[in-house]
Amino acid sequence: RFHLAQMQAEPVPSQAQVLQVDVQDDRALVLLRFTAPDRPTPWQAARVYRQTAEGWLHTQPTLDFWGDRQTLETGPFTFHYYGRDAAAVQGAAGLLEEEYTRLRAVLGLPAVAEVHQVAVEPTAWQRAFDYPQAALVLPSPLTTPRPEDVTPAQLLAQAALLYYITELTSEAFDRYGYGDYWIWSNLTETGLRNWLILESNIALQTEERDLLAWLRKGLAQGQPPPDAFLRDCQLLQGLDVELLIYPCDGVAQAAFRGPPVARLSALYTVYEYDNTRDASLADISSGPRWRRETNQELLAMITIYAYVFATYGPARFPHLLAALGQEQRWDGVVSAALDLEAAAFQARWQAWLP
Image (tube, rainbow, N blue to C red; front, side, top):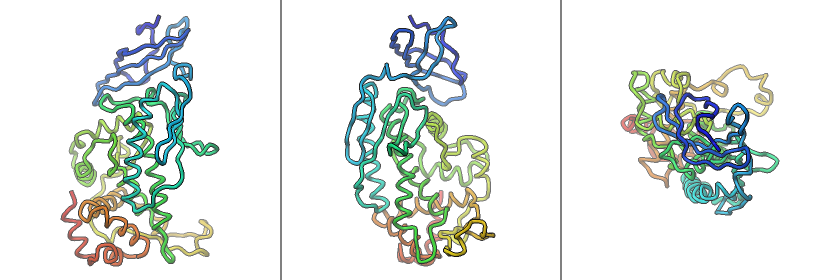
């Protein structure tokens, strides 16, 4: 018989409540509800315990509790999973397909031809990519710490989408990021990836403009983070994911304490590239290609994407991406994408900034 009092203590100081127990021989799969003073919301996670002379000790999940291997094919994804996770996978598949397809359209990318393999493994500890099998590997949503207002399906879909946003950004780079003798800068690419995270809608709840305003000015002024930010950080920590646009600890937040950037001239959109000069990194001395952008510069680029999408709509957004590769300077970019002069665009962007 499983006894809560005999459980090994959890690594995070918290109070635990047993919600469900499945015992097989000397092992127990236990669904627990946790609360902690430093966490904004209760969370749930399943743990596997092994009975010993010292009590029930936390151990690695085994497949015994998860049932038979199953497969689900849906649109651009094929899921491989076990029976216990079936309901979560079936719910996640629809969420992921809808949002992934929408983001492809936002980027102006063609319908995907290849099928992505997603494996949900109870024995996995964190998200990873299995290169020999060409599959994204995700832990079971049952064993992943999950805020109570997030369903297992939402958790699984969000974990997968964060990975595929990186892939979508790389695909957009390949489609738009190369000019005659220049390529998208890190500012352009990283800004796009983080804006897509803000634009995606599955389990993260912090309002985009509230987060942008706090990172631009509020954080440095000592203001508290927006509603839902700490809850979203709890979700991301459970997924073992760190995101630039969600600075969840003091070190990450300190990187945003510089003055906000609101001038186009401060933002390098491309790097000039010379095959001979850049053949060896050892020959590179200095210059904007290897300059490290500040987080406030990255944030400014994120706000440009957000402003263009909100103001000019999804139909114009791919034109901006194309212009960022075709043109070296902002006057050419905004003229090609939006038929505006750079000064007019900058004034309107500045007026929109939260």
